[in-house]
Length: 287
Ligand SMILES: [Fe+2]
Image 1 (cartoon, protein in one colour):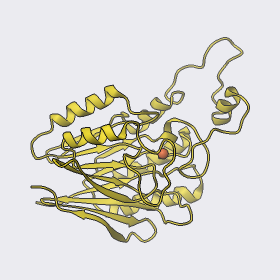
Image 2 (image 1 turned 120 degrees about the horizontal axis):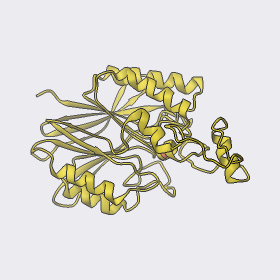
Image 3 (image 1 turned 60 degrees about the vertical axis):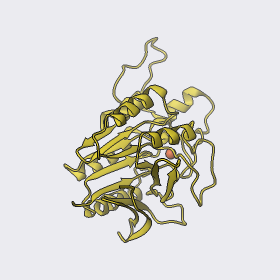
Image 4 (image 1 turned 45 degrees about the vertical axis):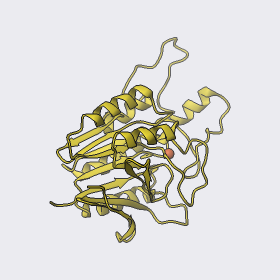
């Protein structure tokens, strides 16, 4: 059987600058070259969740055409922030009103007129995201794959996790089970763990995912291409994080390509600059 090929993209932090727009276009070109069966994007698509930033990313993702894709929001897409990659700090303004006006000067809140701004797809961050990329708890099912994704910003919600668990329990026998979110479940080498890096109750979530026989967990946020094999003695799962598009001067932009076939799972890091793959991780899957 042909191997299943998943492309895992994350953390574009697209701010509308020509440099990042060009880098994103190149990343999408490289990803299309991989001829994937499924695209998973694990959040922080935008620098600040602004409509124009999200529109630019949506237009690029459209280039995947009919290839199925699952897009998860990151903290930057839902909670406005500025700062260097991976940081999240409030804008340096004096009041909440200044804060919001600085983010969306064109919104016109109408505070003086005694009525609120009309609700629209661009006033609520979650609606702003889902109107462009689909539901926040995205999912994908095919005969060989069952993927569920959850929104981890500002935190994982129990009701959403319960829905995800029910869906995974109903997976057809033999389907490859994947779970995707933005925040991490484990620390990764090369990144000092910061407040808010890991999903809340990440230990409990990891135990649940092993019980649900999830074989692959995909996340972003940490800007490091890495994979851990985690086992509770009964089941095992691969927890893989993708690199970022933003370049912090030490690493080039990258994404991951994951190949799954009978008895084997391989994670390759692909450089956006060269397109070259490097083997990040390889394991045998229990039969
Ligand atoms: Fe993030």
